[in-house]
Amino acid sequence: MNGYDFTLAGADLQVRGSGALYWPARRLLCVSDLHLGKSERMARRGGTALPPYETQDTLSRLDAELAATTPEIVVCLGDSFDDAAAADALPDRDRLWISRLQAGRRWVWIEGNHDPGPVDLGGTHLNELPMHPLVFRHIAQPAQSGEISGHYHPKASLTAKGRTITRPCFLIDGDRVILPAFGTYTGGLRCHDVVLTDLMRDEALAVLTGPFPAPIPMPR
Image (cartoon, rainbow, N blue to C red):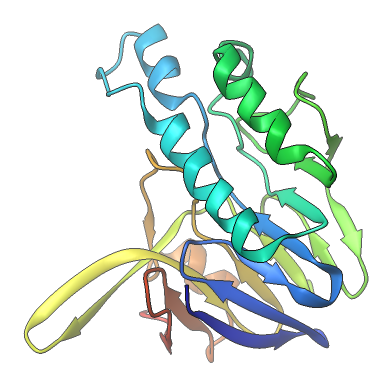
C-alpha cells in the first residue's frame, strides 16, 4: 500500500492509506478509534441493529498493517472499544486474535473518552505516551507541538473529473497530526467543522485514505 511521507517535529513519519500512521525510526505503528464492539454496544442499548462483523473486519485490516510494517510498538490512540462493556463482551476468538497481534510487541492502549479504564486484554494502558519528539494522546490540545491524536474521525471530500469522493482523512500541520478513525463502523467529522479549523493551522493538509494517499489543502 502506498503512503505519504512527511516530517513532524523532526520525526519522519508515513501516512498509510489504511488510516494507520507509521514511524519507521521507532518501528511504531499507530491507529486510532477502532471502536471494537460497536455493534454489540448498539444492540445492548436498543439501537439500530448492525451486522456483527465490524470487529473482525477492523482486526483483519489491522492484522494486514502489522504484516506490512512489522512494528515493534503498536499504539492504539484511544476509543479502541466502543465502551468498557463492549471490551468485556468480545468473544474468545477476537480476544485470542488480539493476543496474537500483541505477541512479541510493546502494545499501548491510550485512554479515550469511550474507554477510560484499563482493559483485560494485555498491553499497557496509559493516559498519553510521550516519545520524544512526539506525544501520543486521544484528544488534541491547543498550543502543542509534535502531537499525534485522534478522536474527531476527520473526513474530507475531493472532486475530480466530475466525481466527488468522501473518505476518512489525516489532518497534518506543523504542530500536529489528527488521525482518522480506523474502525469499520465509525462516522466522521467534516474538515470544515469549526472544531477542526480552530485546531489546525492555515497551511494544514488533508490526506485522504485509500490506495493512493496524497495531500490536498485542508477543506475549510
